[in-house]
Image (cartoon, rainbow, N blue to C red; front, side):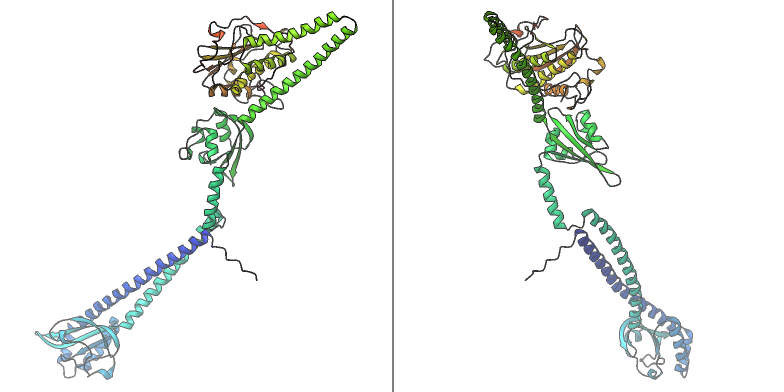
Length: 578
């Protein structure tokens, strides 16, 4: 048997419409009922006042007193009473003797009979009103005496039927209900229009569905680790999730929501991307400690309503990509060296085949001594293993590009000197990008001999990394722009440029260091990064550089055949390759 589907709950807009319509109907009905009761009471009061006024005016009329004294009072009073009844709108006018015998009545047959009702107060000279059921039915009546010389000579009663009062009230209430119906119709129409608009905004969902969607929305918002930022039409933060606050390094959601993007304290390029009116696709931006991929999408419905921003953290990925580029370059250098080594091996074999064994041994020994000398020289200048390995690899890469890499022997960075607060990955990022930037600049120089000089030393509780080149130098107007993401004076390659030096500055600022660029004495540029060492390890020998400033003396390394692992990131003069 097929079970019938349960009816779908009414939408939130429909529920609101029904509730508002019922409330409006109750208000109108209550007001109408109150008005009906109030009008009925007012109508009865008005009827009493009208009956009293008519009765008193008749009792004070001289013609009435004169007719009462005549031999046949009814003959004169009946036409007069009917005329007054017609002119004043009352339902009956009865003039009677002090004992209550009628002289006049709307019905001819009731004349001469006793008045039905209370007359005692009037017989004693008082005027009063009452609601009483007489020959004409229930009526509101007034009874007053006709006095002459202080003596009651007759009584006058004027009254209005309750039915007539009710008829008047019904007419008023009918008009009231017509107005109330019109108000209800207008209210219902206005409510319908408002709720139709609400239905469009809620997409016809009921309260339970909206509540469930809100719960899912909150759960999804906080579960997504990527940053999500929603801006309103005035570029103020309307919504931000936990990932977005973490990636941007801003305060709590309560502090951020409602704040303009320009007041969040973000780097200028990132702020400009968030304030852009057009969409942004996979743009790389730097914060103080992260590399972010930013995507923006305007929300529009005929007008700009806001912007949706997504943020992805690619700090580790960017570092790994830089290391991969460095490894790729190092692999190419090793391939070239392998080709060169094969040529030398063929030379040794050929010398042996020619019977020149001693010359073959001398040639091979010289090559080995040259490679070992290069390694010894680098390690003696910088014995810190990670930086030594990096410099050996960069030396081979620079040689492949026709640039001579020189490590200053007056520097010196002993193993174990660096604290744990300076991770090797950051040092590789800083020195690797500076060296790659210098090699790029030196390679483009028109000089016959192009060199890059590297100095690494620890001095006055600071780690100093200095890289100088013999390239074309730095335009003074570009000294600040060099470290901004995306700035470059070279053609943009497939991988993009303008990120290397920005990563260097980010790493230096993360460790509260300084980064400067100056002009070299022999031309070219000198980049210097200074990083605080903090508390040095107790174990470990003092640095040679702590005893003396680095001097211009250098150890020049010829074409090497060194083998070393290197890590680093690709760089360029105006930002480096990303």
